Image 1 (cartoon, one colour):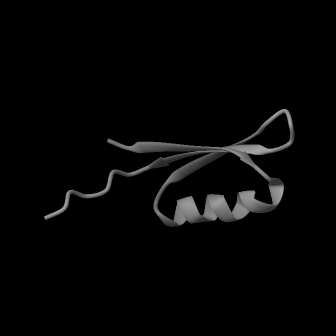
Image 2 (cartoon, one colour):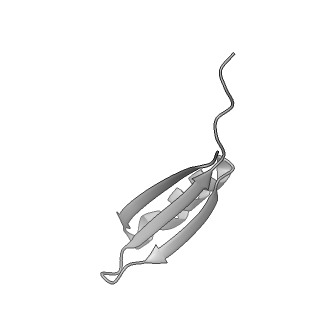
Length: 52
């Protein structure tokens, strides 16, 4: 089952790096601009495989 991670109040200058980091982990990422100009990032990430 996928895991959703939500980060809020991210400044413009940090958004691209955060999105790239999540995408490098195989996550699907959506960014939303908040009314105050900051961003919310919603990352849907695959479950980690079970440990052996």
